[in-house]
Image (cartoon, rainbow, N blue to C red; front, side, top):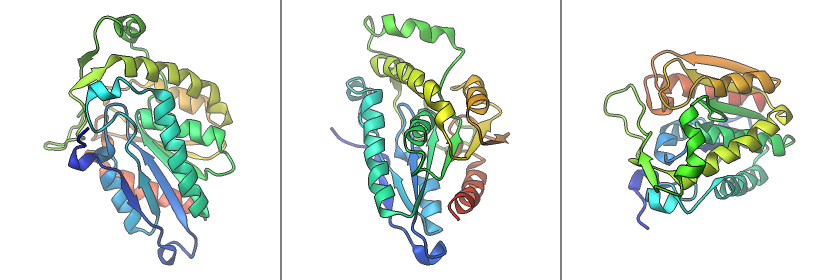
Length: 253
């Protein structure tokens, strides 16, 4: 299956000469129906600061929504965990970050590997919802394969996350089931969390950030007033880079 040129994974080696002699890694996960394109500028900026960076392409993403409908939460988490393990084995310390569904995935990583995750950066994480329409997805997935897409919720003109124009419903049902796993694990997250939340987000409602704040012991929240859901490509992208780089340096010192 053809992969969009901007949807390929991004990888950069560590530069200990820029990070105080230590090998520090950062793993970044894109969101549901998205691709590494939404995380690449952030990853490239962190790599320029000397961090080893991995931005994997989750299974079923970056190709077609039909292919994504043949994957699910276990596939996405499994791929992310394998990437994390390889990165952690090569580094002295690792910080994980995620956008939207990617935020939920990295929270599970932090809960399951507390001794190896030094910090967590979240951008509009998705771990729950108040949207009652999602209750119909378990039944609807057997009737229709997809519905209209949710991508490109970006205030900045011309920005494009290169996601799917359709939302695959079997994959969506799998994500909502995966949320239950994340919710049960939140209190096991020991690493400090830096949470970026867009004031206007048409994809993820405020209940996810509220749940993270309520259950995770150490959370610093930053409200983004100029960006929508895909804030990593929006007007506040530079702020996310600068504040996350400062956070990575602090928690891995």
